[in-house]
Each structure stands twice: as structure tokens, then as C-alpha cells.
Length: 161
Image 1 (cartoon, helix red, strand yellow):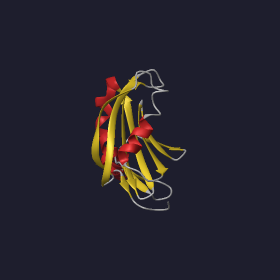
Image 2 (spheres, one colour):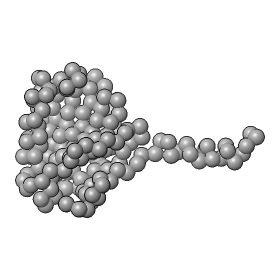
Image 3 (spheres, helix red, strand yellow):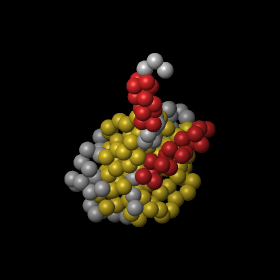
């Protein structure tokens, strides 16, 4: 090769293209891993991670309560926007290393696509954290690994409340 320095620089950069990144919310309250190829969009009260038609959204809510109640409260907001919205399963789970709850749903999302939605929540003191993950039902397997990685990497880190 005529430019060995340039070749070494290019080869050194290749792993960075495929590396996951850590997202920490602006107040340092939580962090999670963002898989390669997902874009980050700030939302009111949280953040969304998007890749194609799939997304994972995290939001912080105030107030005490059980994670199950938080999942149910958030889930009740979807039927007005998702035709044929129905729960398929729910239960207890660890989320962010803390006791949490989850529920799976299906329905037709606002884009008119049959989709799968999972809501997971935990409560840390006076703050609740909710993760919503969704992808088209027909393509769910394509995004499942990344969505699971996002969920599994979520950690409450403290920060400003």
C-alpha cells in the first residue's frame, strides 16, 4: 500500500463504526447501551432510540407506587392510538437491577402497522422509569436482539432528581 499511515488509521477506525455507545440521560439519572445503527432522539421527559420502524423509549415519571401499577397506567394510554390493542402477557421482572414489572401487547400502531409493544417499569424512591420497546410484528425478530440489549443494559445511576 502506498500510504501505510492512512491504511492504519482506517483500520483503527473500523471497530468504532460497529461499537455500541453508552447513553446517559442529561441529569445522570440512568444509563443504557445503544447498539450500533440506532439513533438517539430527545423527547419531552425522556429519550427514544430508533432504527427503521423499531424504537425503544425511556421516560422518567414522578411519584411512588408499584412497578405493576406504572405499567398498567402507561398501557392504558395506548388503546386510543393503537386499534386492536390487547395485552398478551405480563409479570414481574428485574429492570435496571431493581424489582420491576412488564407487559407485552399487540395492536396496530399509529403508522397502521401490526406491531408488538413491551412496557417495562421500575420505581426508585420517588421516581419511576418506564421503557417501551416496539417493532412491527412481521420484523420483530430482526430487532429483538437489539431491543433486548437495550432493556438489559438499563441502569438507574442516581443523578439529579
